[in-house]
Image 1 (cartoon, one colour):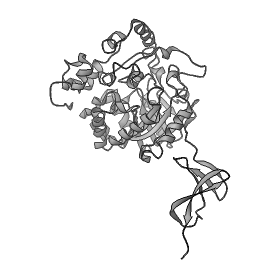
Image 2 (image 1 turned 45 degrees about the vertical axis):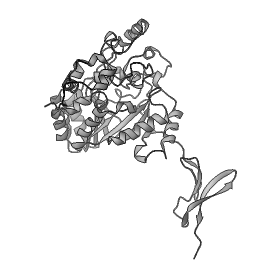
Image 3 (image 1 turned 30 degrees about the horizontal axis):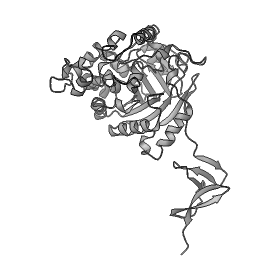
Image 4 (image 1 turned 30 degrees about the vertical axis):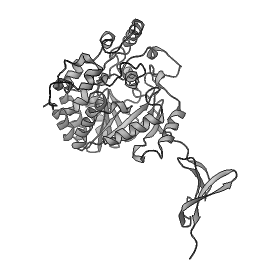
Length: 411
């Protein structure tokens, strides 16, 4: 049964921004099926909402002939139509930059998900974890998608999950404790198919955790208002959800409600952002995003460095930018709000944490540390330091200001 909000009118702010939605009823706007049915799929349709020049239309049609466009009305409604640099627009609206090859090391599958696949739709890279790519469909085709290959040429290379083979493989490998169900977006699968996948996984004794990778709370939160879906997810716990907010403007009353519906049935929600040029590549935006996530009870989990995927180069920043952001976050927001910055190594190397260096030097009995303010501290790593007071004092040591603690006077 679909949960509906009361009233006949759509949100007033929505109509102010996009008068085209003035005839939409509130219960329609809250219906995920209506959202998918009315998604923006063509450049001509997009131009009804966002002003495009004729040259822009020509360019975008070139892009969508290779990398199609699909935007839910809900996600479109988050865009400022007057701002060409809007961070939501950059993620959803095609760009001619997607067709430009900036270097020769980009690949369609740089993480070797298909090479590390023992059977169709399954990737096994880490000893205790596997990835199931359950579908090639998403409610919104993100322009920075690491699996852009699977909806290229309108799904010409869509993955075909052989569920029986995948379940047999997982059953035979007792070292597998954790299964990630991703896609595409698995929550858009027909509910009986999703339940079949979850039921089969839950029947394997050594599978402890099922994780679902979904951007539905961001681009189609209405699907998590559906009691049938919520009942299925509740039935096959423990389940964890990893979602993908990239900008604080994506956090709305709708996304908060979707997250709350998951939390009510015992599903924790983690966030995995991607560092994107022009979207969130500054400390202020990332700090604001983390604070907003914590307010809706979502844990900031990872910031991914943008992968070297064909068609995505214009989003990639330097590693130093990501390290700068993490360093600025540390000490200026609760540790709960500081995600781990990772590079997913090309060639199937897996996730590698990238962190600022807070250890400046060390010997067997001394470590020189730097804190978030840039202050330098001498630390005794072996637990032999004497009792100290709470007040630091400075001394010069080889030109470096070192903060150490005053020793207590003996009685």
